[in-house]
Image (tube, rainbow, N blue to C red; front, side, top):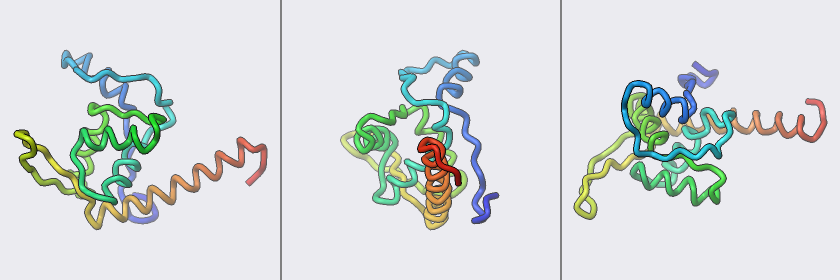
Length: 142
């Protein structure tokens, strides 16, 4: 638990999850680009929560929104985003509803009040981390 009373998540990098799936004999149709550095652990959760704070979205819509909003600086495939959505739903940070759209059934996800608290906590942590890294990169001391 963090100081804000929100469970702390230790996410496995997406490429490790896919490697694990391959080892178990599960074939993945997701192409993973090796463009996201390993230090992005936990960032997909923060980005997903932030986007869902604006409006409800379905999984692939989130994948595309992340690429668009970051101008392709971050590219998380469906194989990364869907496990995060499932975790967020299990922990009640998001809720979902199924809806028919264009002949398909889609799960639309929305942020819950609990998810809003989680977003606030993660955002504060992210600001502290980026401030500290900036100081190091600029050669200053905290």
